[in-house]
Length: 363
Image (cartoon, rainbow, N blue to C red; front, side):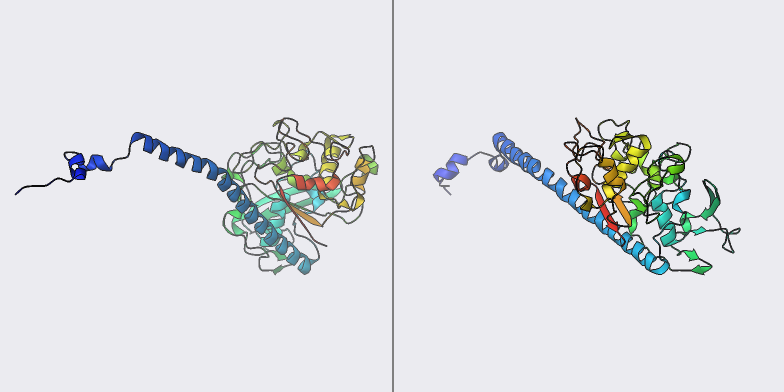
């Protein structure tokens, strides 16, 4: 039988079928280039989506915690915190044994006993002793494994006011401890923390009193302790390697430190400057912005808070109000948000310029 070849079959006669199907090197390089271009375009967008999702998750966590705080207030007429504020330290270098957030979690979830409780002696836990000037010692037993059983007040047991979900309730590593020793691992902490979607602990600060300066003012016999104090924040804000991100919050990190560790603000230095910084972040803008003069600190001290408690997540950078944000940059950080003028023309509205998630509550 005679085989008749068409021009097409003749042209490809003898060429292996596999070779006819292969891509050329140029074609492969073009495809690889297109894929690389698409990846380069999509990765930044994906990163932004992930960060927005984390911010949304964190906001949800903070709002649920705020609801629990409000429910606690409705029941007891105060916002959560077993240890009184005046026993939490002096708000500068006297680091308390637990943070203000852990203090609030104990109130909301239980896991503690006071000496006035009938089972105090037999309660399994770690006994902590807090001191305050001209006051008897305050003692408490805490047990992180018992948190969730509900608080006990005046001999009556209540259901837990807050039920955390998953990772938002875990021990945050690197917290500064009394005596200045930082914890190295997440498992070393005494109590679990309220943690944001980036793995950093969330700050909770409540109003200690309803009168007086917004934050501490003066020293000695004429000192005003202030309505809000930084004392319970110190385990977090003094850390040199906090949380999952292992972030240095201190001024040793010269370009990206927390402004809550600033050395100078509003014409003040040291502790006064750091207290004023907290006041600027939480005060109501009704008093107006500063004018860049000696009255800037007075505006903060005389300010009205936006709420009776605040929750602060450090945001995507893991630093509580970084000096590289606000009106600062990584090359020109600014730790002073109290002084007005070009340093901060926004007054308390400067809080919106940080990537932190800040929620206020209470009435």
